Structures are given as C-alpha cells and as structure tokens.
Image: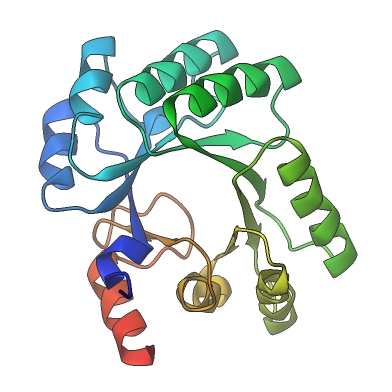
Length: 217
C-alpha cells in the first residue's frame, strides 16, 4: 500500500511550551521535536514521546552543552522516539552512545550535515553522505543553502544513491528540493507546522506541502 502523504511530511515543531507542543502534535503522523528551540523538563520529554505520532528527536548544538543534549536525546529514545538526529560533526563518543541506545530500542539514526552558506560540489556531497553512513546512519540528511538552480540539481542527484537519503535545499531557491525529495524515494521531507513557524529558511508549511505533493503524485 502506498504511504499516505501525511506520513511523508515531517513537521518540525519548536513550540516554546510543552502545552503548545502537545497541541501542535495532535493529529500528526510524523513530526520532529526541536529541543534546542524549546523549554522543557525531563517529564516533558516522556509526555511528548508518548504521543502516537512517529517522532524525530533533534537537539542542535548551541543552546546546551553536549552532556545535556546527550541525556535528552537518550531519554527521548527510551520514551519511544522513532528517529534520532545527530550531527555529522558531533564528537565520536557522543554519536556512539546515542547510536548504541537507538539500536537497543529500534530507533533509526539520522546523521545530518548542514551548510548554511552554500551547496558543496557533487564529489564533496558524495563524500559527506559516505561519512554519514560510516558514522552509523540509517538515514543520511544533507541540508545545504541553495544559491542557484545548479545547487538544486546537485542535491537532487544525490538521490540516485540506493541508500536512504534526505536532501534539503535551504533558502527560497531550494524549496523545490523539499518537494522532490519525498517524490524521489526519500523516507520523508520536512515542513513547518504553519506559516511563521519555520525552523529553517525556505521551509514550506505542512498544508501547502501536502497539496503540492498530492498534485505531483
């Protein structure tokens, strides 16, 4: 059976409070919880990940130290996260610990690379993807800022790889990759909950993304 459109779109949630987060999760099939943009307690992690939705646990560096990030992501996995996102450049021991807990709990590991200024050349992108899988990824996520149509072409060409890859073109010029990645075999794509709640430049809101994907299937 073909998966529903809703299950191909991961809604990135960064609500400031646990109550607004739980409200935003209602009716979702797939969502990303951005801990780095939220205020939460350990008991909140349990509440969030008891949701029936498939959830991606993400805690980007910058707002907390690695120990706090590690403990939070491990808790999310133990409470039922379907996916955990760890940055390619993270410390090897940090990645190893999260990967071990994820394997024990049947949680899939996303190893992600972000470039907020440009899109590397194709050879470099392929090496980055290889590095993601060498780091233990079940899914490699490549998110790069798009400055030209050629950047979009390079990103989408990475999907010819038989492995499980998500590509994201950040910025207004990269929006096409966010739609195409879900149509070209990626596990899912990312969207904002609604306009004004974007967690990355160029992110399309869920309802618009759903309409666009349906119109192209």
